[in-house]
Image 1: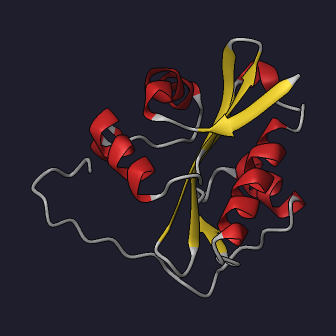
Image 2 (image 1 turned 90 degrees about the vertical axis):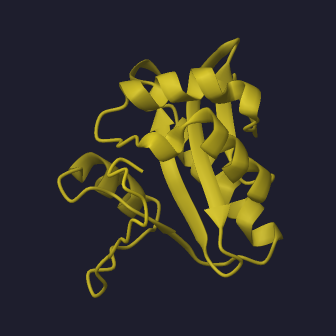
Length: 144
């Protein structure tokens, strides 16, 4: 039985371990415990973890700018895939965003991560090829 609950900072060590083991998931210095704690505090009730027994098997980091939702770092352990855990985490996130009036959500997937693209397309997400992402880094740290 899968239990899905809100992510809290005490989940950080298990979540970061899961993220580190997940292929095609990019981690940066901004994924530090302090940064994730601040993110969770700014976006309460939007990020979730999945447990089977006492084992953390899935996680998703979700936030909003007040207008749009942003789904980030969805991961399910390799041995727990194919059990609809990723689907449940996405649905829980979308429902939590809808509760606060956020109807549209974005996510980023590496162009070569065809498995993730297929997963999201099967859930009704669609690619936005008409836009291009730009980034700006005001820090001297290139890994933020």
